[in-house]
Amino acid sequence: MRRRKVKGAKEKLLSYEGLIYEAEDLNASFLENLGWQDSDVWVEIGMGRGQFILEYARRHPEKKFIGIEMKEEVLLRALQKLEDAPMDNIKFILGNANLMSDFFKPESLGRIFVNFCDPWPKTRWAKRRLTHRNYLAIYQKLMHEGGELHFKTDAEALFEFSVNEVLEVPYFKLLTVQLDLHNRETDIPTTEYEDKFKDKGLKIYRMVAKRG
Ligand SMILES: C[S@@+](CC[C@H](N)C(=O)[O-])C[C@H]1O[C@@H](n2cnc3c(N)ncnc32)[C@H](O)[C@@H]1O
Image (cartoon, rainbow, N blue to C red):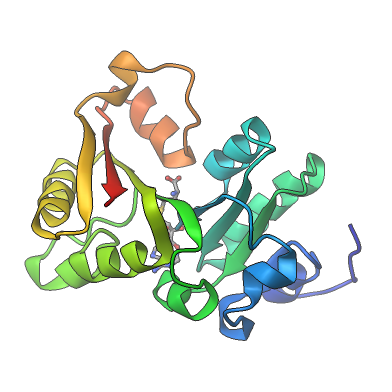
């Protein structure tokens, strides 16, 4: 891995050449340019410090992973972890996930993870939730048939909202609803937020929906 010497947070981030890309610089040839156009590509949106997607990438060397995050400081932590334990099947994108259609072609993704996204509790903020139907429309366009949306949260109201959004749109089929994920499953990749909530004894909700 080649790195330039740099000062600010963003410069530091972008010094991880070949591992991180800025959303605004990308176009629809992104996966081709990586040579990943024929791979099963799994994306995590709002990946924070990357614990979850890095662990998935470690467990699935046969797949390709892309984490999208808009906060520079947290993304930097993910890059540092990757530098400590390098893998060549994972890349990161700095930027807003609402730009995804600019850099992923339709039907190019196999799975999208949304984990512990901001609940945006007020009704007037509903469109900002990453499981709002406007986002579901983007996800379904970018995933191929049979692709899966995996969503986890500790927020009951957000979970209920998200399940209802999936049920309202015609292109997703609800596969799984778990109201206490860790009561049943133990050896699964977790996120930083998930560990924090789990340790406090809070229930974690999970939904899986399939693109039909
Ligand atoms: C509550 S944190 C959860 C982080 C991580 N998924 C976890 O579970 O530990 C939500 C993260 O999503 C990021 N985020 C929220 N909206 C986003 C968007 N539209 N595009 C990219 N990242 C986003 C935030 O910057 C934040 O780091």
